[in-house]
Length: 193
Image 1 (cartoon, rainbow, N blue to C red):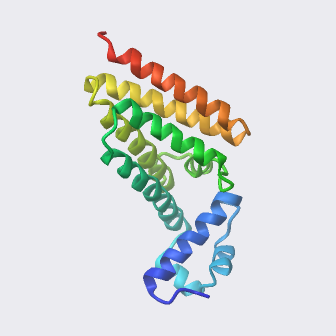
Image 2 (tube, rainbow, N blue to C red):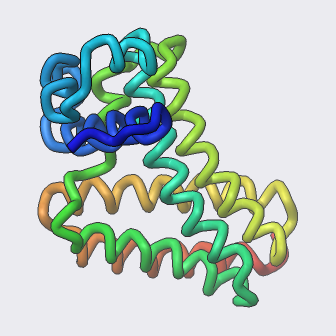
């Protein structure tokens, strides 16, 4: 059954495309397949998304918002900065174990849309930079801004590496090692330099 309101239809298309893109990829999933799976008229699809690229960007933003809501909740908790960072790694561990895990949708998008001027590439960059900036904001509570910037970039690389290893079936070991390395780096970065 197709949702009735324009917003509901738009959201239904986004959620349908999200499910298809994460399973089959962006280029391999055609608009006609999305239309059929979402059970919407072609005109409805193009009214909401004049191009496939616009739909892909909206799907990536939808996925980013889901993750950001969880990070917003974490930011409001009164935990030590190290514990907040550890919780981000814990979230990734739960994600790696979920039956819904198919690797990072943003990394897949980057692999398919490598041109830095492309809107999909820019959507990926916004999400990855957003996570790095959130970790930096947490770390600023305990270290100078420049050091927090450097450490947050390193933590993002640890997360991205662990995500790739999880896609290869080694998620638990990878995230444990990444989490330990992250906490060791944070502890070492607290001291005078």
